[in-house]
Length: 542
Image (tube, rainbow, N blue to C red; front, side, top):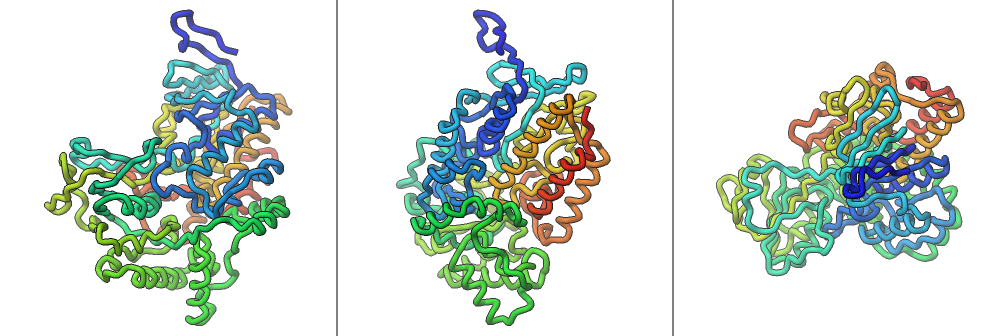
């Protein structure tokens, strides 16, 4: 129901709703579908002009998922997963966006989505037990539930380099790429950053541009994708057993079902020859499953060192210039930053039009009207591409003024680092849910599997409230503190603390250093199921 504020002021209106969902990516679309099954009057508010979330915004050259396409898709609707045809082992951004457009159309989801609109503020009224949601178009919604489906990697991180805004050429961020594409022919291009988006985009930019200068602070471990068209016979076999695939995925630590599992043995339990043969086999298969070569690569420093050494040796063989190869070779723990899946990245540095500038010891000091300046040397360029990643997991939430009980803001609650219970709720913020929030497995898993589990959990929480005639649910401070301690304890058993990564927020100056995701999907899911079965201990329902 909408009540207009006046005939001459069509945007000044208030809607009474049961649920507001922020974001129309994988999480927002599924949450909308499930909210409808509960009969909830729901609206999705999306900043973009279409569905897709991160796949709407990330259109940079080479943008591609690092999860196999047959697994990077919804498993909650049998006809949907049978009818959709993926073309490649790893789907490109356009194909993933086409898939989500198909989902939105197939289930008639767009009629409940408001596009081109940002949520600016959410505030909880303790007297009415309702949230007021204010958006950039001046509209106001009064709602019982708010679900933040804002994504873990959706808030672009632009470095505060002096003179950045003085540059006279074109500038781009990989996470906010022009939808019409970019022509780099005849240009000299600076690429700042060598994380996933840099690794994916640099080879394609180098094919167009006259010259590419890559500014690298920290080299990435990257393994080949070996992308290829999907084999129709393999696709048919998977679809014949899709239900079991999906079930298997939810019973693993990472949410992957049908692909190669982690070998159940230590890297130190085999001979050097067998270890190398195992790494060779995984390298030839390609993808993130390289880290599943042995069961302790993220637990045992000695085992991890063997995998890291193997990748460095591979880089040395691929890159012709030994000095460049050395600069491209990380000396950190492999896997403590997200492993990158690449196509011809290292080989690109053999091109005569590509050069590498190490800014680890001497950072980019300035950007002028025509150049990127490092150690007093002016690198004159026509365009700058910032492949500098995202303010991961919390960035999009930090940009919304969220106020809970007693006027406390989420920014204040998270001033020392994000705290949640199950990655789903925050003490003092009733009926506010975060899909794949900090404190959940999220980015350490197949994201679609984690999203589905979260959405279904939220659906069931709301259903239980209504069945028992209750209005609100929120985490207690005590349970939240225990959960945060548990997440840190589990992460402390791993090697994820072996380097400064966006898992810790280390890529954003001033952000508190807290390890945000929880390793281990199946244990997490089991715990969530137990919490529901026991009547939601750790939460207050009223």
